[in-house]
Length: 181
Ligand code: 5GP
Image (cartoon, rainbow, N blue to C red):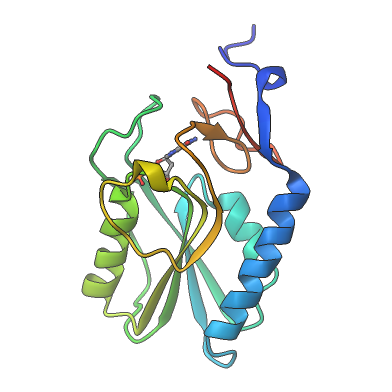
């Protein structure tokens, strides 16, 4: 039995696999130029949506890289933010005086990004904290945040694919799309 109420054949593609991979190379080049190549960079991915983005991005980075993941959620199974950040697993190594790049799949209201940037800067005393998001749903912003590296802007659509899910599905798609209403 198929438990998904939205089917992949109805998805409209927004960003193809090639568009995503090309853009990630450009972002990596910027990151390589803006961080010291001799200093280690802690890449902190936000589970689970950023997994594919982190995996592809780090393969283009030239400095010594450490990869960490934290788990947060502001969405339930719904397509609307719950308005609260739930910290599920925030365990991280000592980041004092380290260069940190937080990697998200999408910034929507900005709640998660806002929380994370403050948390890493204040609780961890990192030297430099930058933020990368593959997608920026800028029209949905409630909490202003500074995103240093943006893949693509999206308008107010619920998107899936390339890490982003609907009810846990579609994260494995190599492209990003949406279901027309
Ligand atoms: P924010 O805290 O900025 O409101 O939301 C960030 C999180 O909400 C993202 O990391 C992502 O998990 C989820 N989210 C926001 N917009 C979308 C969307 O269009 N599609 C999916 N699948 N998740 C989204």
